[in-house]
Structure formats: structure tokens, C-alpha cells
Length: 186
Image 1: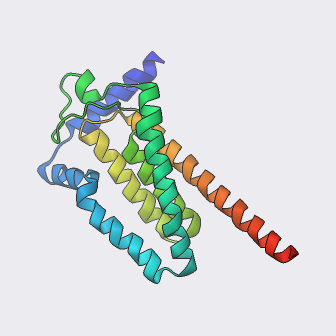
Image 2: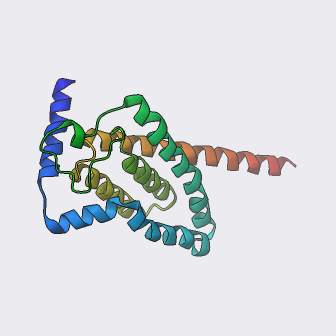
């Protein structure tokens, strides 16, 4: 376990120590939901308006999915694990956006973005998975780059997000199939 913690810390320092002004600006942009929220809202409205039945399904499933993942990560798992953020626990970690004082594990950004990426990927199988997981990866990387999370916080968050999305889609499909069977038997 100690070797994993040392690897986690070394990888954090490696990622957090490689800075460039353009990369700083990009990481600050992608990690800030207030800045990217308008883009996400436009995509969500586009799914409802022009996405057809599949787009509306994805848009509506995003609501319980993000509610689940955000509450689970921010209010259950962070309190359960209570891991101190690297910018608080380690010397020499650069936190250009300031250090947060909430718990570090799991990264809620990773949980939420990987959950959304998985949902999109389960419904749109062509090029969307590359874009969705790519964006989730960039957002998650930004959390390490900014000194706010260990790599294991992000990896754990990604796994939790994927699992939550798979569960929500599974429940949705079970409910839809049950409704179809009920209607067929009437």
C-alpha cells in the first residue's frame, strides 16, 4: 500500500510540476463549471430539441445520473474517506486556482464527467465515445494539474462514474422493458 501511495504522489508531482501559461489557462477553463456550464446547457437543450427520441432519453437520464453521482461523491464518499487534498497535505504542490478544503477522494469532477461520458457512449457508439471520454479525461487531468487531486482520486472517480452510469442505464432499460411487456400483455 505504501508503494502505491508513493507512486500516486510521484505522479502527482510530475503532472503538477509541468506547467505552461497556455496549459494553465486551458486547465482553469475546463475545470470551472461556471465557465463551461453554458456550453453544457446548450448541448443539453440541443439533445432535447434536435436529438430525437434518443437525444431526449439521454438528456433526461443525465438529470438523475448527475444528481446521483454528484451527491454520492460529494456528500457520501468524500465524507467516508476524508482524504486530505494534495495541496494541503504536500509541500511544493502548485495550486494556481487556490486550494480547496473539502476532502479529496473521489474527484467529483471525474465522477460526473466519466458518468456523463459513459451515458453518451452507451447511446451513441460512433465517434461520441472518443469525444466524451476525451473531454472527461482532460477535465480529470486538470484536477491533478491544478494540485487539487491525486491521480488515484481521479482514477477512483472515473471508475465510480462509469459504474453509476452503467447502473442508471441498466435500471432505465429494465423499466422500459417492463413497460413494454405490460403494454403487450394488455
